[in-house]
Length: 146
Image (cartoon, rainbow, N blue to C red; front, side, top):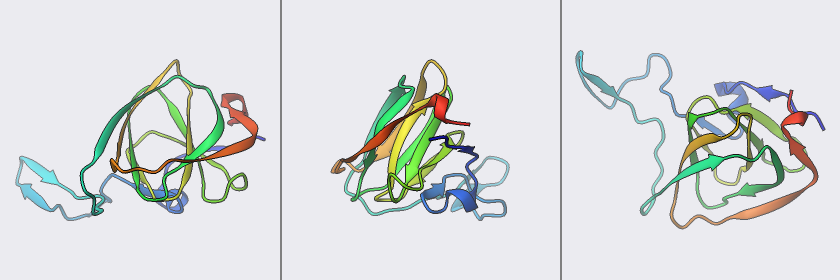
């Protein structure tokens, strides 16, 4: 199974989540001329939050993970990583180069492959996150990505 790595763009990423960068022309929530602009790019009611630091060294994915009750934020910090995403595994698995902050919708199946020695990713999610797993019929690794 070969999977083409896609660039994260609003139209191709929309089935899985949102880009956490304000669109051109967006109005900031708060601003001070010549000092700062503060944009709210995603909002969801939650009781608390969990902030994690993922040091991804794995170059293959055997199973996908899903959180049916919470969205999940991924903020790339270093290295190069690919997100494998699906709303209907094992069909329709897409790969996106994680090169900007994103939020995955609730219920999106996902896995991470590092293209470099390691990839460091900031993760934000609800502290009451539920984890579900889907075992893939065949291993997906960096050699399957084009």
